[in-house]
Image 1 (cartoon, chains in turn green, purple):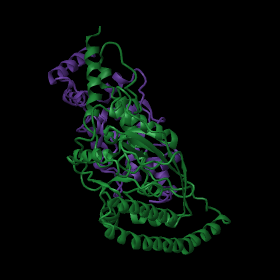
Image 2 (cartoon, helix red, strand yellow):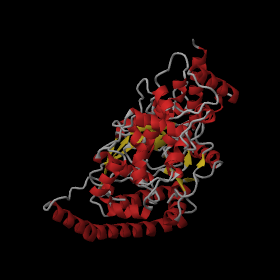
Image 3 (cartoon, chains in turn green, brown):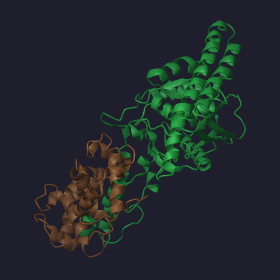
Image 4 (cartoon, chains in turn yellow, cyan):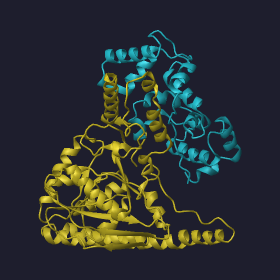
Length: 376
Length: 175
């Protein structure tokens, strides 16, 4: 859905200088050891540490690893297991899938036949209409979850409707939203999608109060932050759900959280989601498949099994910046869901890193050269 | 993409291994092929500069442009040969040869004062002035017995860099 064709342009506002130090995370050759002694020709010509870092990045890098699909191990590799697997395939595609499709269709019919009347007839009585719409959205999400035989275990206290609180969660696929929504009707902030998803976004999700953004718009960020703030202050708005990673990650790593959710002056309630890979790889690799294909893949798998943890609400500590707050919450979520943290901004999928990182390396090398020139 | 190692036959693996002078084991070559396919997103059979630069760790490297000139558009066999200098099995001479090639951008076997100045510029960016760079380079060349007009060849590099071990190894992750 989001295209990776076309030139990547250097990002402007997304990557701030005051991020935690990336050098702490990168495999370092030159970064740790401080060369001493008088500067010799050898020291200038020996570019091996920098070349090693570059070659290391070519061979394997922590950013690409975040977006690698991890299909379950194939187990159908011998004469006995293969027929078993084949009959499994037949069962999944010819029995499970049609049953699920029927269940989903029934769910949609019930939903639409209730939602449309409620939406139009109760136009006068706003609070009642909102209450019903909330219940109906939770209903259709439950139907969706049933259509993949979703087995979701919720841990922790259920979210309550209070003002001045936002929920943040790690992001693996758009189904994260559906899984959380079936329990509580959140208002969510989402990238506007084309196609039938976009239609759903502009009609049904509008009723629970969703906020749209456009990744490619730089100015968009300020407008969105303002909308977020307004929403979170409102007393009878649905609780706001934000995915601070900004993009889908493969449920084994977490990328850096955007600070937007953490500077609204609200309590942040972390939610951790972990999918059980044995049943299906729930990662939506938007570069490889459309959302429709992704849903179909889920509907022809055995089950989607996941755990959802509602964790302890966090507040901004005195003297903590929004970025530090975001990192602290990311740490809480990553530990709970067993995710490895990487220091990359998820938007690097769509844009190049800021030149500031390279400049920092250049500066440290330059300073070392000048310093050693002075030594005897 | 599916199981990529099935697209590489045993014959292919051996051919690649021969081409890089056995710098990598067969398992490592299979892993490198998976990586190559992962980077080559449009499936053209070679990794373009854009695709390399989409790896943020590579894009922030000061020498990325120089390396791109050497690695852009290589097919898989040449890609492995390019990386062979970083294998733990590579000899010191192979590593020094690689470094020499990075400096010798026009490939004529001679590294000039300007070549070295260019690399120093890549490494230090705007944090040292051009004059200071020239000064530093002239000074260390002088101490090593060369002049501004000297043309360094591979044997000079061996003499300068060969004295203490060069740490230039990259581990290929093998599942």
